[in-house]
Image (tube, rainbow, N blue to C red; front, side, top):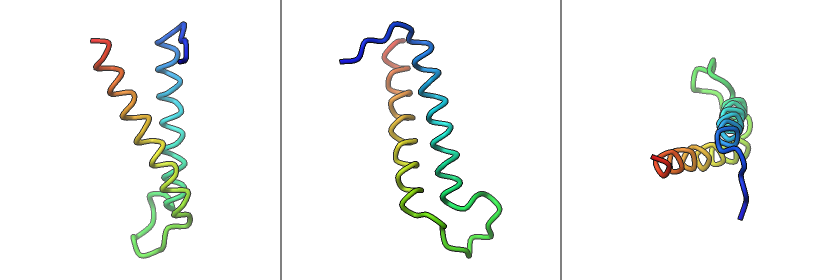
Length: 68
């Protein structure tokens, strides 16, 4: 079990890490300017980072509801 002294700072850190993972997933997918006909440059990277983003987002939502 992890002991967190400052929950607000811990939540802010998780939000920042989630945003960085989302940007990394976007970069692995090839960005936003592709026309949709080009293959994804790094499928493994996209799947990895989007999985982390999904898990952290779920964790943030679950913990936000728990505190209310």
